[in-house]
Image 1 (cartoon, helix red, strand yellow):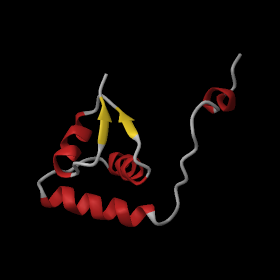
Image 2: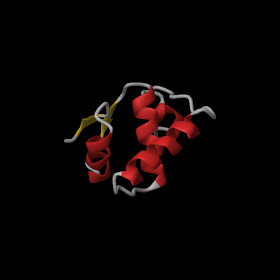
Image 3: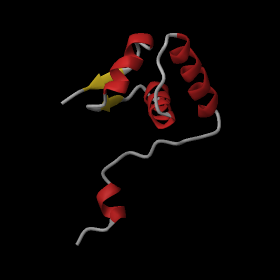
Image 4: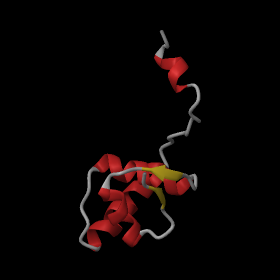
Length: 78
């Protein structure tokens, strides 16, 4: 049987330091200014994705809405 640590070992660790919270706040402000409200955790994922220039795999339509305001967001939708 696989342990959680073994299952997660294929994933890269992404540091979450205090400076990300400013980016999350600015992103939420910019989105709300454009009429978009979304769950806080989606904003955190988006801020991390933008900071590290990652490709976000999702089928959640919140991220398509975020991309209308944040053009640098890279999405892959299966």
